Structure formats: structure tokens, C-alpha cells
Image (cartoon, helix red, strand yellow):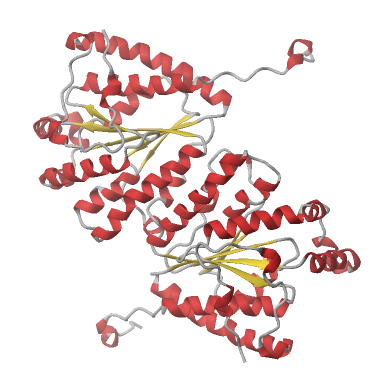
Length: 272
Length: 272
């Protein structure tokens, strides 16, 4: 049996203590991984079907934000939730270190460009939240400046919502122990070497600072219309399943429909 | 003698009645047009000098917004205030009818792209304000939707200001009689024929609706850090002079400075 993944939604105004939020989920399908993956297969098809309608309808805009510590599985979540969809209507925007031109503008400038058009799903692999996460932890701007950003971000997402965007934000929550194992795998397994970056270890050293920054960011910006979900992510199948279920529910609520054909379609004869 | 153009600034929270705001200014240089133009010449050089420093310093971002009814002189104001500046650091963005791609996004999407980078002056010839002006008058979106936009716009400009942008907004205010004369000129003078568009007459028919829309937009969005100025614009020289004086004061307040050279510059020998 499934489970109620909506309980991972952070209600607006709630205090967030990530130390108390589960990182390991196994309460779906009696913890049976194979059953979970079977369900994920079915979810993918349903998501793809609804995405096709969404694209045809050209009415709703959908923005999915993924944030997480390294190794938590942002990339594989994107792949495994959206791989049956049409890439023409589903695009991923990855936000790494900003370019000089991006730094010369406000921090939402580069992000706004990539917000979805009507009919599209856009997935943010990292996002404007880095500007209150890594920027805060590494003190790249003064505190009074990053603190004002919570308000900017709420306002920005409010604009998007008011103008027709549906927003869901996911924090893929792993434990520090689980991260150690995954980083070790990247050192041990030849095919995973390419994923290893020594910079990840410096980020890991600041684990507690990042948890504090995430907790504040989630608390300050989880709103009724642009909610955060804290997804237990130590188990891969559970994390993907949870995100897929929530994405599917989101699309179902939008109830996208193929547009009506013009009335006279059956009168049209295709010329030889 | 000059005059205090700061009095055209709309204080935050003030009610705006455009019927009571002057469209004809002549209280500078005793109304002497030639003296006004001589001063404008000097202002242009000062503006260009400060713009060069601003560009070199790469610190401040400056956004100038121009809005007006047709024929009020947006284009010639831009030309005559900025023509001595370096086009590399001063760019104009003109916002006409949105493209399909622009319409598929929120209305600030196309505008945000063109906000200035550090060291740059960006002039908006029309702007996001059209989304509470022409959009309102022609009922292109429902009232509850355009009414929410005042808040979006305040939030958006607040973001820009918090992240280092200086904003000045100008409404070039002409009388309906003056517009009639100028439209007639476009019909009468061969070299001005190209400027005439019959659509301008349809806009003129809705004059009072536009005045009401402008009054609300200015009242709702004139803030301490992103103020509107209502510039009497029936007299061309006075309008250009007023904008140039305010732009110059704005740049002076930023006090841009050429960056210090590296200490050891005088030790450097250029190789043959």
C-alpha cells in the first residue's frame, strides 16, 4: 500500500528542525523496495500522460525545485521521475557557480530567465535558494543582505504563482552517515570516480551550518502556494517514489485537458 | 537660474491627480528656451563624465524608466539626455507588444532580463508599467489580476534596489491639446509621416482612462527608493532639462569613482 506523502509538506509558518525530520523512509509498500519501484514505473507513465496534456493545453506553468546536500540524489531523482516525459515540454535548469555576468545582476536575474512558460514543466537542479545557503555559510554577502532575501524569494514566488505558475519545492534529506557512505562509494567504484569532487568534503565539514541554513530557508519560504517538502532520502527508491507521487498529485490537481478541436474538423479533406 | 526639479517627485503614499499636475513648465531660466538648451548641453557632458566613472567602477546599477502618452517625447528625451554617454555602458530597452514567448511567462520575465548590470545605466522606453496601463485600459487581464501587479512591481523594484540598483521613473506629462497638435504635425509634415500610427488615435480616445490608470500606477508604486517624477512635458526643452537635471543629481549622489590603480603601476615597463 501507498502512504500519505503530503505529510512531508512544511506548513507555512512552521518551525523546522531538520535533526528531527526523518532521513530514512520505509513506510510504503511495507518497506518493499521492489514494490516501490513497480509503483514508480506506473507513476512515471501517469506523469508523462498528464505532461502531454499540460503541454497541449498551454495554460499552466509548473516549477519543481530540488535542493539537497551532495550525493542526496537530485540528478537521479530528476531522471527517474521525468524520464518518460517529452523533453520538449520538460526542461531542467541547473544552477552552478554564477558567471561574472550573473554576479553583475541581482541573484534572481539568472533564475527568472529559466522559469517555465505556459504548458511547460521546469525542474530546477539547485536554484535561487543557493543564495541563502552556500552564500550564507561561506559569508559571500553580509548577513543583513542574505536575510532580506527570504522576503525577495517569497515575493518572487508569489509573482510566479499569481501569474499562473504551480510551484513545488523538495529538500532531499539525507543523514550525514549516509553521505559518508556515498562519498566513499565514489572513491571506491571506478564508474563513480567522475562524480567525486574534493570540494564536496569542504561542504561536508560545514554540515551543521548547512542544516541550519536549510532549516531557516525552508521555514521562511514554505508558503501555501509554494510549499517545501522534506523528503527522507537515505533510501533511493523511497525518495524517488515520494517525489513522483507528489508531482503526480500536483499535475492531477491541475487537471490539464487537450484543447477542443475546431468544430469543423470532420469537414476537412486533406488534398492529394 | 535653475529650478528645483525634485519637487516633481511623487512622495510615497501621496494621492495623484494628474489633472492638477502641470503639463507646461517654464519656471527655469525665466522661461528662456535658449538658456535651457545651453544648460542641457552642459548637463549632458556632466552626465557622460559620471557615466564613465560608473562604468569603470562596476559597482552601481542604474535603471531609468520612461512612460508617457504618445508624442510626449520619450524617444527624444532619451536621445537628448544620454547622447554624450558611451553606448557600451548605457543601453535602451524598448518594450512593445509582447511576443508569444513573452506572453507565455509572467509579465516581469521579459523586463527582468534587461535590468542593468553593475556599472551600467539601462533606460526603459516603456516598461512593466504597461502591464497596469494598456493592459488595464483594454481589459487584457481581469481587474483582480492587474490590481495584484502593483504589489508585484513594488516587490520587484525592492529586490533590484536591495541588490544594488538605483531606480528613477519618469512620467512625461502632456496635455491632451498638446498631443492633438503633435499628432497633427505628424500628418502635416512629410518628414514626420513615418511616426504616425492610426492606433495612436484609438489610444487618444481613451485619454481619461489612461490618465486614471497612470494616476493609480504612480500612486501605488512611487516609493522612497524607486520614485516617480511627473515631468511637465508640453515644452520640449523644459522636459529634457528636467529629466537631465534629475539624472545628473542621481549620478552625483552615487559618487562613482575610477578604481584605484594597482600600487606598482609605475614599476611596469611595457616590453618593446
